[in-house]
Amino acid sequence: DVKVTQSSRYLVKRTGEKVFLECVQDMDHENMFWYRQDPGLGLRLIYFSYDVKMKEKGDIPEGYSVSREKKERFSLILESASTNQTSMYLCASSPPTGIFTEAFFGQGTRLTVV
Amino acid sequence: TQLLEQSPQFLSIQEGENLTVYCNSSSVFSSLQWYRQEPGEGPVLLVTVVTGGEVKKLKRLTFQFGDARKDSSLHITAAQPGDTGLYLCAGASESNYQLIWGAGTKLIIKP
Image (tube, rainbow over the protein chains, first blue to last red):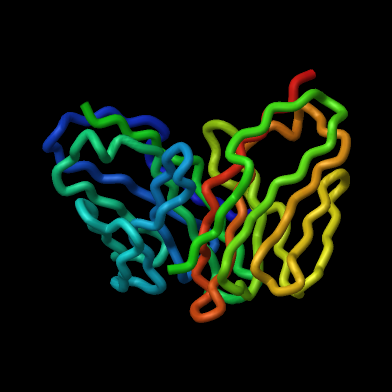
């Protein structure tokens, strides 16, 4: 079974802190994604990566950056956390994108910025 | 920009009732996926539909892809409390297969 593991289930950080969210997958997937999920807004794509050291902006990249130094690991960085970044963050991985591509998700990190 | 409108946003019904959730768009998708998410977990894929008019069944769940591949529906027959969760549809863009997500339907089935 594909396993996508996010480093924390719950995080509380202060405004202005630099925050690191880590994600590891064990299925050698090329693609990895970071989403944030807010009630009524669905999943919004922050960044994705289709290869090591490659990254592409999603729909809402402002205030975030990412790092993919190894194929299995994709990190999301909040450069200076703000209260409007309080949200559920979901990491996902998938094989090369195609019609039947399934996204496999981690359990999510609920981040609260105070 | 491709959009996928999902309705209803929230549904609370009694056990044994039937329900339908809709995903609609003005854009054509190469495929349409339905996911289910339980509290505290990430979404898990239920089904992928690819061909216009395609119908897939998963026990009491019936998924249909519109003839023009712009819309999809999820019908649950005789809903059970175990069906409770957030249901998400996601369309794969024709140009690059990136997933476009609906906002989700929060479903509560009361015993």
